[in-house]
Image (cartoon, rainbow, N blue to C red):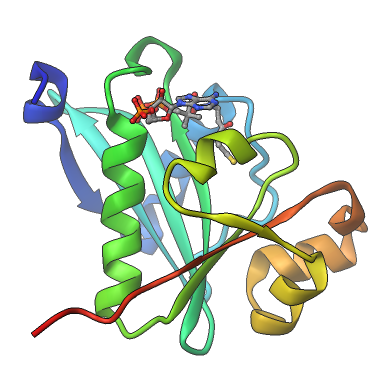
Length: 158
Ligand SMILES: CC(C)(COP(=O)(O)OP(=O)(O)OC[C@H]1O[C@@H](n2cnc3c(N)ncnc32)[C@H](O)[C@@H]1OP(=O)(O)O)[C@@H](O)C(=O)NCCC(=O)NCCS
């Protein structure tokens, strides 16, 4: 394991810390308009007390939407996003989710590394009709500009 990953700590954020997620996402040129703690959880990766990356999960029924995976530019290529992604997927799986979805228009090659496959947009919308990012896509009319991805989550072996 590299030294960055040995030092990274993942911290679950309270609703009062929304600003920390917004700040990180803005530094990574990511959208922030639908970030909310409603039916959602967010985690931050910290390195020596500095917020360097984040990930969010929007909760549906036996499925969730992975979102806002971002790492500050100077901390990239060290496995921080991989650590955050695997952590969030495990949170989803251990919470009983059978599938995780996400939107991305151009980062498919990144997500295939984690076993995501592309599915029709309608599949995601039907699976998670009420989560904030789907509502944002429908209300702000960006759904057709994005693409939907799915990863099935295996139940934990006993
Ligand atoms: C994409 C992003 C999160 C990657 O963060 P990172 O910490 O550098 O990623 P990691 O070091 O954990 O890399 C994990 C794997 O993804 C690969 N990867 C990293 N960036 C990639 C990219 N842009 N495209 C394809 N693969 C990528 C790495 O090579 C690595 O593969 P490996 O495990 O087989 O070696 C980061 O570049 C970022 O914050 N970008 C802006 C926000 C963004 O686009 N987020 C994704 C939203 S869909």
